[in-house]
Image (cartoon, rainbow, N blue to C red; front, side, top):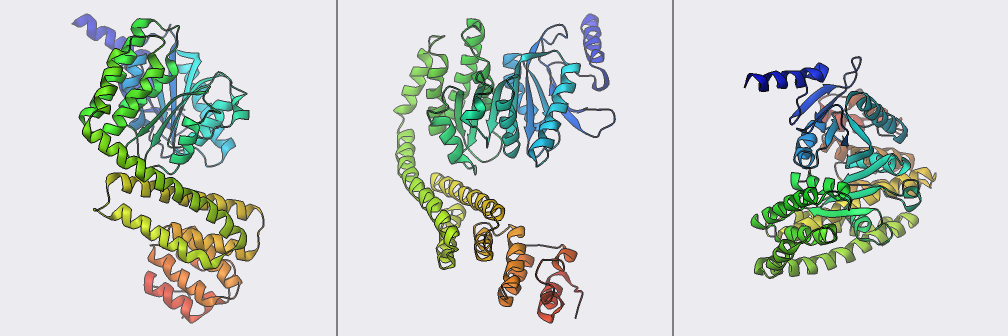
Length: 456
């Protein structure tokens, strides 16, 4: 026992400032003595500074490196991998964000026993746009795990032709349709090693992260014993999903294991579980219902895509009522307890798709120096599809004032304040409202909501 504690003490001291113990997640390690930035880290139990280990670098739009590193620890233990998760958000612009990633990766090279031939980037939501871009541009990146979003381009991928990609898509995510196109389309099938849809809109369960990691690290040169461990872990997770009554998720997960393992192992247990789920009455009912809902969802998504392009091009204000009605219908399905779980999820996906598409359209219109009418239209549409988008209300207030529509400016000013907006000084700096904001109506509205006004 004394020898055990002595070895543990040596191991902890070896890793310096944070006494990093293999087999445990350390939530906060300083990235640089002169910086406030920290990262979380997991080192495998068999960690030896003289060896080399695969590494997963985690970047999340909310900077939840500690939480996600913990979620990755099961897969990391299974694959003897290091996980390093940034506890900070990446910059909103691509070049500074890539520099932030580079700084963490280069510093980690100096600190830990990393196999530079097996570098895996894991991006979550907006951060995944940066990690996926980086992975395609750098042939030193071995794998990419994309959660919630991604940017994949065939021309970019040619710069890193050996890249392996695993996609985890929340079925309530705004980028569900885009990720599905990546995961199921033929144009990228050379790179896509896994595509998994999971329940919800936030972080995936640990089992999904573990399978994404093995999607990338499995190959025909790996010892059969190790592959068997990967397979057994995947099958255990598939069985867990089934026992939790997540029939469709379980079936989709277990059927994906066929292509993953059939060339290496005997997969009789996979076939048996897939068959058992397939003949389950609850599964068949859910699958049939899902087929009907998915068909209608696809048609409505196509309508949204078509009318967004048409209405924006023509600045078709008369069709704003249709958009308002469609958003109300989606909200009813999202909020109603009478809606089935599948209907609710379809409505969440559609609403997220519309919000994201409208934002993209706004950026295009803004970049094109479009007519004031077109810019006003797309901003009003932004307020309809996302009433919490305060920037859209501010834009409409200013553009309406520019067009001389005082009543519209005052109406949207009040709607902005109803949404909880409290930036008092900014209300008196909205473009094109100079004359309006010194008038009584403007100041009375502000005083009603914020308790004070600059004039009157």
